[in-house]
Image (cartoon, rainbow, N blue to C red; front, side, top):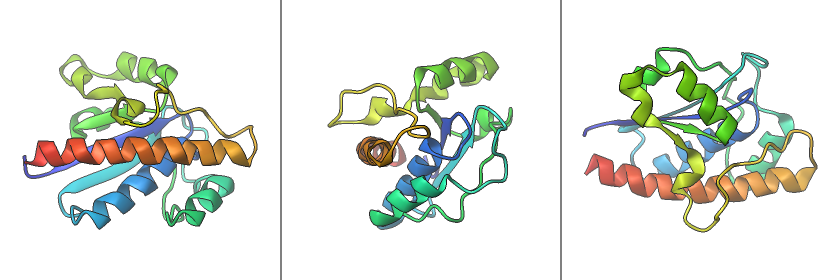
Length: 159
């Protein structure tokens, strides 16, 4: 496999999935794989299409060296199922929605993001939108763990 693509998915694509997108882009660049790995994010709903990530998500990510400013929310499209090698849902609800929308030949591309985590035992990334600062920090902890495990997986896939 010469190239690999991954799509992170949450509800509105302004907190969890763009955080994962930004962290993963950073790790991919650091690993020297930016020309071989495509990273994107989307939402299951069109609530925030065209908007930048939540300002709190951006602020907390920035403190850890991740830049989310250029990202813009979009909704998952039918073309995404064929385009991406992996489509990673932030929680079981997103995964169920994706499974209903995804054509049968691409069902094996759908997974929970935290299946790639190696330090945390949580299965879902909680939505920090209605919580305080600690929620965004916890999301970053989970996302960093998941992205590191995902990068290991991608390196194996790329050979």
